[in-house]
Length: 54
Image 1 (cartoon, one colour):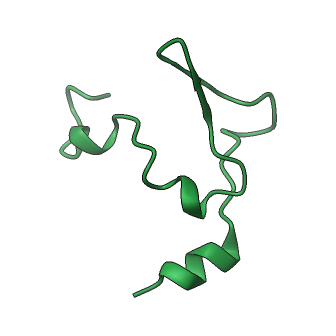
Image 2 (image 1 turned 180 degrees about the horizontal axis):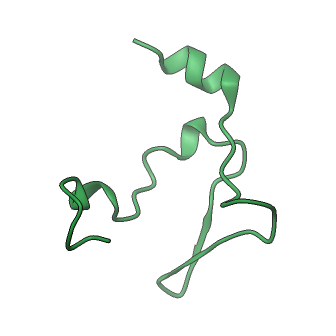
């Protein structure tokens, strides 16, 4: 997907958004570990999202 995405630079993993995730992904040995849950395992921490809302 990175080759065809206009926003490929956003597809790299960054940890600056961990503060708004309920459970941040774990990075181990250079690999991103996707949790064994339905979907992609991404859930927002709604209180944190509201806190950082501009």
